[in-house]
Image 1 (cartoon, rainbow, N blue to C red):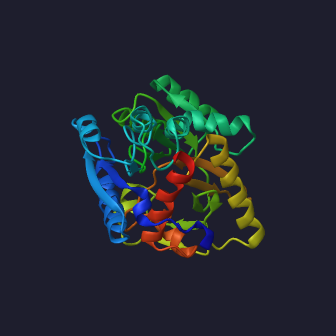
Image 2 (cartoon, rainbow, N blue to C red):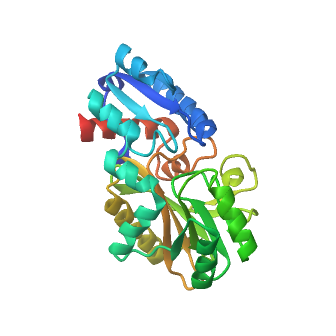
Length: 314
């Protein structure tokens, strides 16, 4: 994995704006990720500065000397293609996926539809817009189920449900975050997360938590979440998981870096859940953990992500 490391002089990146914060429900996580990335770039010799994205963003981008942007905005407004489109219009090269892949990956429903069209396994699902939809989904899919806002990350608004009353209540709660809500079959078995970096698939991580599922608290706050690297799969199954992840990311059009979440059922089959185009970069985050297992420390990881923006966008 040493080929992933950047060989560019840090000064070759020019003046780099690290974009973080924003207004999404994931603002708190983005602030932590952004500060960590900014500190790593600066300590690595990059001329980097931070912008907490707010209403004055356009003026900041126009008034500052910016040679490229490192996007560490999680959720809507930063991970959904809108920021990528703005930077395209301004002619500012940026890290990560482009407009189309960012918008697609942020939409869980359409991502699943793309995967299904290519024969990639993803749990059966339904779209909820009413209590009648909840009853129809329960009849078709059975229980337990998991309810998800279609355009949120960090497990925000998600809930596992066991009966129709819980399903209707969880749908109503999820509507506070998103006008489009999904419900999926619950997959019984271990969860894995698999990062990709510059076209390479990093070592998968098996996740363990005493929580009902890998929720917001387990991701960012809890000290009892378990991360298993190596992931415990035999070599053939691990290669199958990595291959599935590569195909899933290619289908969406991922560039630079990303992280996919995958379940494995009792029969050993893998099921794609979603792909994140701007994954977390906090002290609890998974991409830095996978990068370490591949031989890259946090600073080398940030430089590699930045170097990809040069390779892909000049």
